[in-house]
Length: 205
Image 1 (cartoon, helix red, strand yellow):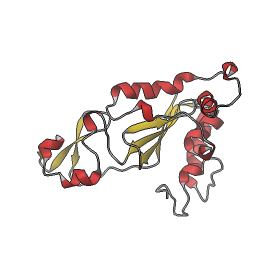
Image 2 (cartoon, helix red, strand yellow):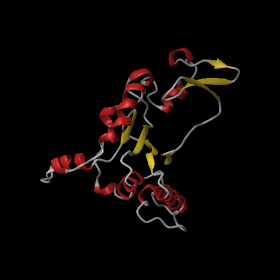
Image 3 (cartoon, helix red, strand yellow):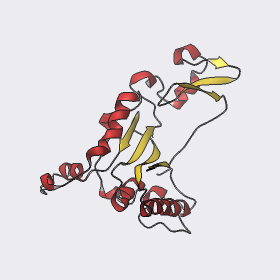
Image 4 (cartoon, helix red, strand yellow):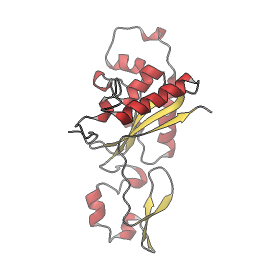
């Protein structure tokens, strides 16, 4: 069961091939914006669709590589003659070095048939954006680095009183929350941050 469903019960990340302005307006106009940027010579340098993952732990990326897809499928096609921009691996490698919650070993750059209508694959194929990704951030917490203590949301809630154990500090009704990719930041006690299916585009200047 998908949690990315629209009011029509459709998984919106499977509608990128032929979105309808009436039935999938957000996808239709997002894709239109990307085509417009390409038409004026400002094709995105990076496209990233943000998701939450319900099974794997940590944070990781799905990217697109024709060569890795053929290798994984054990294709007989001679990939030595195929030209491919290998910069799709640059961002994952940087994150693997800098972000404690990121794990390179969970990344995949294989393009499966079942993902042909996703944002990542459509932007890669139709608009030629080699650095087109889906970033998955686990609902199940981390099992590595500084964040491995945050295993489950329920466990976190049950142990809020043990602030020292989790490295939290109460200050004027706020909690010191450790962000995934940076230093601790102050957020209000009742604030909840949740985003599924949000995408970001980095365009050329």
